[in-house]
Image 1: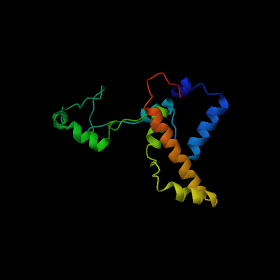
Image 2: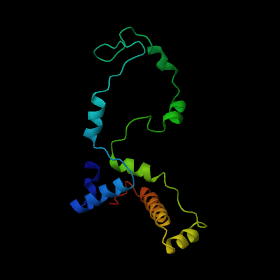
Image 3: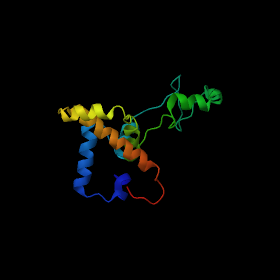
Image 4: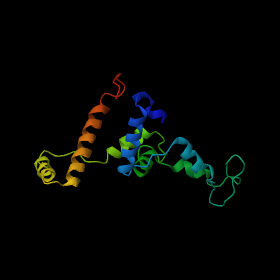
Length: 147
C-alpha cells in the first residue's frame, strides 16, 4: 500500500484499483504476506547440514559459487535474479508489459469487432491503450511528474 501513497487516491479509487487487478487476474501480495510465506521455508544444502547461521557445516559446495556466470544468471532468471518483487507498482508494470501494443493494421479490425459487440475486442483495445499510456509515462519517471 505504501507504493501507492504518492498517488493521492481516495478509498474508492483504491478499491477500484484492487478490483481491477483482481478482474485482470493479477495477484497482489502485501510485503507482510510475502514475509509470512518465506518464514517457514528452510534452506538446506545438498547433504542437509546447515549450522545456526545458515552456513554449510562441512564447507562442501562453497567453491561452486565461484563458477557462476552473471550473464548466464541474468538470461536464466531475468534482470531481478529470481528475487521476489514486493512493490505492487513494479509488479503491475511488469504485468502490463506482457500486453502487446496494437499495430496500425490491427486497429480497424478491432474497431469493427467492437462495433459488432465483441467484448474480447474491447478488452484488447483497453489493455493495449493502457500499455501505451504506461510506456509513455515511464519516460517521465523521476522528472517530477505525478501519475
